[in-house]
Length: 132
Image (cartoon, rainbow, N blue to C red; front, side, top):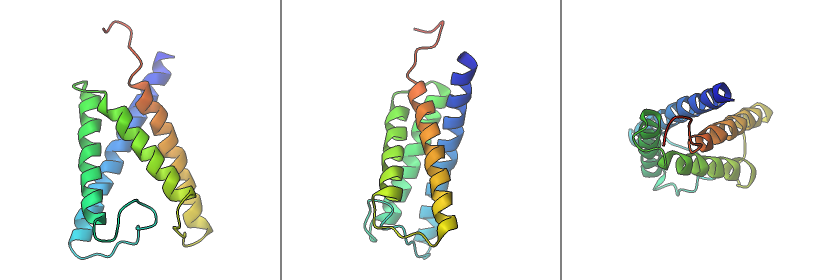
């Protein structure tokens, strides 16, 4: 069971680190003039989407790095919960229209990845043997 928990936590750290880097990179690209069409997918307006993505990316990077290094692990479960809620809300309960069946399947795989990373993020709170 310890190996399963380690793999789940490691997956969650890697997943959220890459996701956070992607959010920061997307915000930086959009700030340089690229047009984003994510308004229905995320809870930001067209005016605040760049700022929202940048803030989310930075918060994700900080919470992931703090949890992975063991400095402060209690922010990470909050972060993974927010990502799970935004993903489920954006894919299933928004007015966002996918470009086709393939785009929807990719979004479903992303949702499954976020769900697995969520369980890994919650697993961070489980007390480890030999630690107080």
